[in-house]
Image (cartoon, rainbow, N blue to C red; front, side, top):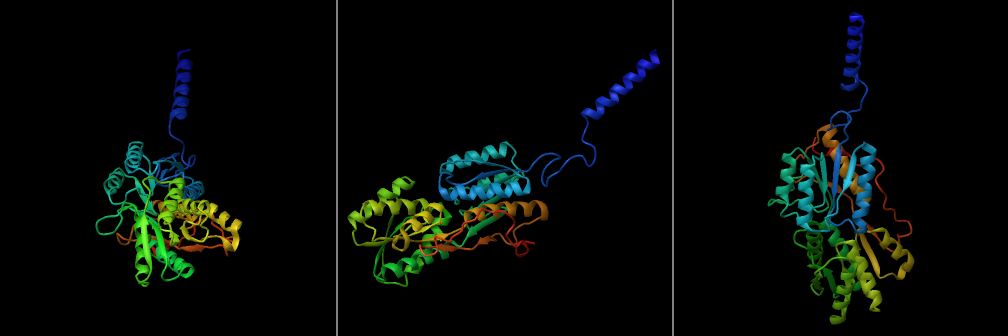
Length: 344
């Protein structure tokens, strides 16, 4: 009887060890960068998620994370640097594997990015990069468009439509937002070719479409000679469009940015007479996916920047009323970048 009891006890202990022990070899998935059964966790932190452009980027990030089997969570900092820093600090505490970041103030956030990296978190920045004193970003990978060229292209569109002696209003950049700085630098540099061109600039104290609708109305009321408007981001373009409509100044030509779906619909609706005559296209749904591609290259293939200023460049496009009917701003669906060109 004692021998039978001892045998039953041994069998019971053996079953308990098997049930509570680790998964047998070949029985579990181990994604790159994670422990057995643990997905790579990605935090997506754009500047201002309510913007249509940011939502499109997030859709691209989500699509690519789903493709690679990563877990994705996005966070809303409402365009506030301090709140974005608090979110990044929380991501560090919560042990995220990666952060995809559009910096609210690239000139001041290098320290929090370094803190995340010291905690073993991969940081991929996009569009508005972390700007070091030497002009480089200390993120593990950086993805953006050629903003300087985009600003220059926008100026040329307006000069062609309004004339070389026109008065052009443009949205003043926030110094901490690198994309706006570079876009407006490109516009101002292109304007130097036209000595009779007059540039005016400011920005409202608050963001959002309604603020820019009132902003453009104030300017054209006090400066009725304004013939063109350049905005370096999409919601300002839409706000300016409706502001000109409301003021009865459809003669003012607007060159916007981001080529969002709503801008496409405005151009389709108004046709060739649309005073939103162009919008620099950044293809944000693809940009978000390329950020996740960069993360995958780091995890799987050991990608690191060949030089501190290495950027994975996205190609600009131009939305106009002429091509609005066929314009496609696709969401990322599969890898698109030739990574053999970068950091190997």
